[in-house]
Length: 90
Image (cartoon, rainbow, N blue to C red; front, side, top):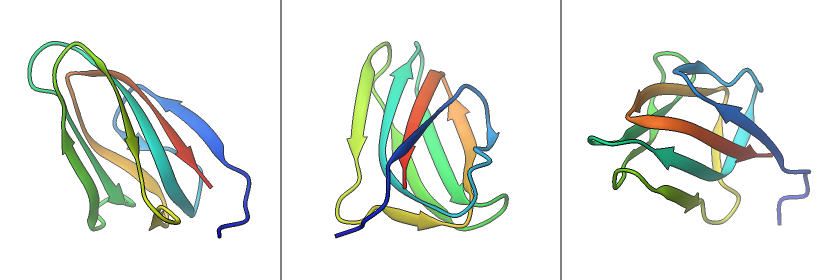
């Protein structure tokens, strides 16, 4: 079991979440019209760790199993037709 406090950060644009090394535990997404897509990489230019397409005009919850996805930096590289997202991390 991962013994760390879970924190949250709301994002509305691409770029670094500026939280340092983290484990992504859950993501809440509010989509707009069109073809919503979210891509998260391990830092700027790093490996893609999560790449998701969503249904438009809805809210979505993505739970990450086990201890989450470990990254050196949560970097949002694609944020298409998404109004906002909240990343829960430890």
